[in-house]
Image 1: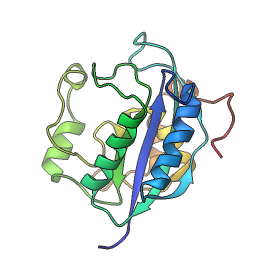
Image 2: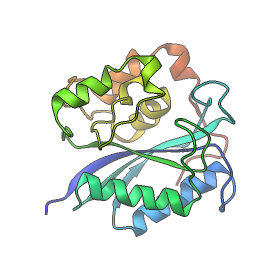
Image 3: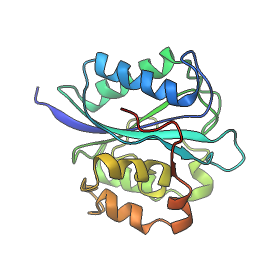
Length: 193
């Protein structure tokens, strides 16, 4: 099997076994590397308002670019195991969590197909919080909507192109409301080196 590049979003807003969210993200990055995924680049850490507003403490977010000779489903399974190891509980969609690892993209792969990805990307806002896909959808259907994903992703993959929209990460980020981008601030805990 050939090596593929993957984009991953990291986030958390509850303390875990390693301490605060920033320490949990650092430990998760160590676990990602130990799991057989080659970490190519890691963004700075960012302090981000909780989404949706009022749902809990603010988040620490980051992004990583990794390489692996694994399928997207295998990478997702690795990420879920790492979340579980760090106490992730899936009690509420978009709820508070110790660790959230989202598989954002696998190169220019579209899963399961263009029509399904587009339908989930175009899902009305009121349904986004309720409906969950029953399979892996790539690129992540909410990628283009979230400053807390795109701002960190600009650190590691600004030129990655969405295979269906044709927009780069930088272009998607620039299209967000300026207030949304400004709300994602470099973390006080420093870079994630």
